[in-house]
Amino acid sequence: MGNRIVVVGTQWGDEGKGKITDYLAQQADVVVRSQGGNNAGHTIIFGGKKFALHLIPSGIFNPHIQNIMANGMVIEPIALFKEFEMIHEAGIIDYQLAISDRAHVIMPYHLDIDVLEENLKGSLAVGTTKKGIGPAYTDKSMRIGIRIGDLLDPEQFKERLTISLRFANLKLQSYGAKTYDFEDLYDTYLEYGKKLAKWVTDTSVLLEKVVFQNKKMLFEGAQGVMLCIDHGTYPYVTSSSPSAASVPLYAGVSPQAITDVVGVTKAYVTRVGSGVFPTEFEDDCSKGIRQRGKEYGTTTGRPRRIGWLDMVVLRHAKRVSGLTSLSVMLLDVLSGVSELKICTGYLLDSKQIDYIPANYNDFAKIQPVYVTLPGWTEDITKCTTFDELPIQAKQYLRAIEEYSGIPIGIFSVGPDRLQTIALKQYFDYK
Ligand code: IMP
Image (tube, rainbow, N blue to C red; front, side, top):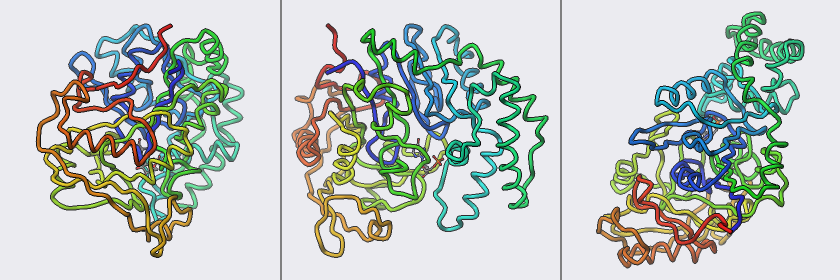
């Protein structure tokens, strides 16, 4: 194992990355978040209290860890200030943080446009988190976005806001919605810039030094590979790439810098928002899983859809993200499920296929091919080793390895940090 590990969600987000990130972050010197914004959310339990982090990297509770919000992120300043307030109230004032001057700013009109555009899509709505993520990345691609560094330069900010707002107001007018006043936004966001200034820097330059020093680095993923704008179930995806392949780009590090990629999956699959989900099922068993796994969105509170583990999805994530090991979360939630299904392949028009069709209508027609394994009834939350698991749980984990072709490095049998069972060492301790 090397010293620069990417943690990536292998499905549609909410795979339990928060817990594994928190676990690995304890051993890291640097924690980097490289993409997305406050559409993500993970819960960290620290000092007996729960913290929902949406933007700030999870090393923030440890004063020795350098936390970095890199260039690929879209940052909503008000949401960020709320997170600062939350951690300050908990007495966390001694932390290290750097924010990229190239990260983009989510402006209030992005939130309005997100809602209006979802409404316009009607039954074809993506089911976004309504946090303005898509419109902010749209402005970035259109080259009319505002970057964090712009907020620190009144002249530059005037220019960037003029152009960004010109497009936004035109859009808002066409929807018959309220437009924004330049002066109000200008003054407010310049103030925000002043508040953020002490953290803002070129994080790529900073990371180059850290890589050179061979520090232990963790790149924490947000969302999951199936929500990737390129490799996900387009158009039901987010507006950036949560794949490990995006990390060098979105963090400004060399592709050779990445040594390992941990793919996180639950022992089953969940999805929030719209879109095809081949292994989804809705019955008493899925209701039980939702209840035991507390499967409600951290950001929006929506009930998550439940499905069986899908090996085509896992192998897809392995291919596009270079997974070197798996972390299987929430295994304990499956206790009491009499029969466990694993989807090993797809049938499309009666033909066996082993890929995710790009054509969305084809994907909607997919019929999963399952193998069925016996479940277990024992409570496994106190197990501390693989050997202590019931035989059926061992078989289930082995089957995941066999069908995905990826070794399991960690599995989790409960929410506590201590209920994390690592089968190997992650960072190099030379
Ligand atoms: P957006 O990222 O808010 O534009 O939402 C696009 C899609 O990604 C929607 O289906 C969201 O529910 C989903 N999504 C975005 N972020 C997350 C996440 O962190 N976990 C799970 N789903 C997410």
